[in-house]
Length: 143
Length: 408
Image 1 (cartoon, chains in turn red, green):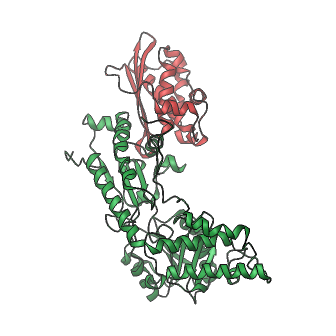
Image 2 (cartoon, chains in turn yellow, brown; image 1 turned 60 degrees about the horizontal axis):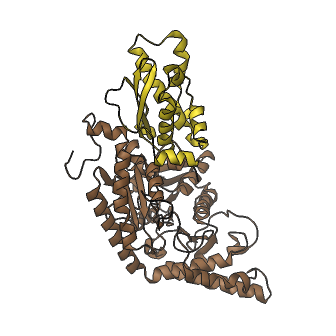
Image 3 (cartoon, one colour; image 1 turned 45 degrees about the horizontal axis):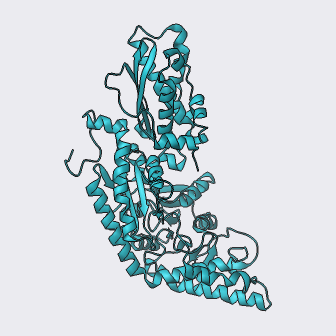
């Protein structure tokens, strides 16, 4: 099988699918041309992400990484979510095939894009947090 | 959704087919009894030789060719490589221009790319929205230095059948060699090399219920191309290597059986095909048929489902027991979706959401049609998590494939 059991589990039974109507922030990355788009919705209270949901157009690993990434930040603080990496998402899924690693980057980027929107609506990204958003400049397909 | 123990329905007969029992029966004695080397002079060798020539005659008869015009190879890809590179190297002094189409199989396209790196010039003919090459385009592309034209008989993804007689006639008039990759046509379409008027034709065994590992190249008498495999004097000293007799005989038997009931088989497949197309298009909105309605392989169906991606679709279909294929980038390992679907004018996102169902001789109508309710469930499930569909439902974007019910 191309995918690990964990990837298949998150693909067959994705966690956190859907929209948060009153989301604090959303982040959309990818494009239909490449065959994958991820949209992440965050509900933030104080400095805690109380809820995270996603909608994804993409392959099995795009859906599985969206599911895992939202699981990994739900109930966590913003600072904890900022330290999420694509590697950690892939590892939590027991690895991804090399050609699918870009999907995990997309998942990290979707979370970071939502957090960026959150900061921008709340006075801007603090200087010491800027480094966590460098990943948004990366080309997903360079991974 | 269904689990691990569901009944399997194999709907990827364009990828490969099950080997017919009659074919296996014909092959088995050639492993243990009649196993000689056809090049040896003693009895076992001569017996093998006569079996080989029997297979060659039977294949030739099935294709309307002379036995001496049939050369056995290891697969369709080898036949395509040999035809193209063999003609290119043989006639390089005459000219270095080759014409093909933009929707060929990679065995053709990559052979041409390899020649382009060696100084040959390749013209890729476009196709119309149904995947047809226009004969007028071919006529206009032929130059004094054109040495070869290669156009597939039927497309492996969308099933479009090209007007081979017409294309071959143009080449004949302009005195340019014409090759066709007939791998997908083998077993379901009539192939008569003389009435097609082709100079070379590639065929593969495993697409027509023979085993993998055997193919052939028809080379019309009077056409000379360079050798591809160097070595012994097998295949009239044109394709070296000990002949794979059991597989060649299996190929001969499978082709013979296919030709024997080709019209009945094609009519049955076509009926199931059209039924499936009608049902899916009427039951799943924002879906289109890719390829031509009539000029289409009897067992080929290719849909695009808007707002979803093909690999997810295949994984869920697999889980429900169905083996199919897709032209999405994710299933090919490249970043771009199928070159064929892009060539017929589909935008990338529509090409990513494609599904090919290829129906074969051993599929029942009932099992083929059982994919329809599965597709309804799966497509809706994927759309429900797609941000593209969400945008459409909330009127933020419009659909590329309009709904067959509401027209939206």
